[in-house]
Image (cartoon, rainbow, N blue to C red; front, side):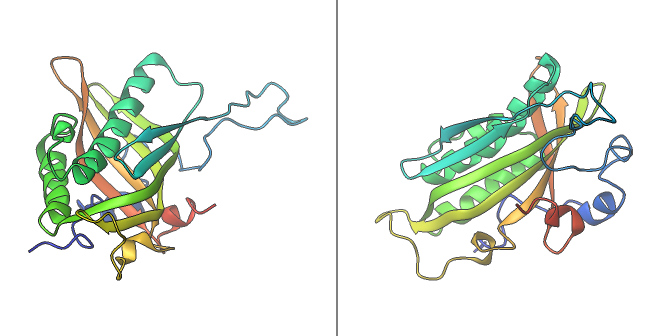
Length: 220
């Protein structure tokens, strides 16, 4: 049986090689900077635009919410990409809390991402596990867009999430390591593709966890 601890959505897909070079050739010239890349206004840069992320809370289950800090200043095309990424993350948690009944997450992903997300959800359902608390997505960036492909980088904090018994709703005694700092805070990388229907879907997930430098940059 696949454990929740090992089959969470932070699936490694040749991530070591990608992360060491800045994730992708298209994004290599844009180093990850938590909090967005709008430069602060200073005397040396008086015309810089200061943008403030918009925070919204999404219900992902009776006892689970996802807090999303959406970046400001995105184009309409970038907003669609970020929304697709956010939908993929939130809908996977909805599948967990509904014990697999809500399968909308499979429509938000394709290929490897869909297979990995399915395995991750079953890791909870097959053991009678659910989740409660609050997960956070922040410092979301559209790292690159090339034709019908795009990459999104985002910080994730799941330190306030608890694995629970699906029947009782009570937290299990031995919480997995991924719910505990510093492992609970990591960098999520998603490769997305725009389909013939014009909709963006996640194609692959990658991640960087502590002590990787890019994961350290997500710590607040």
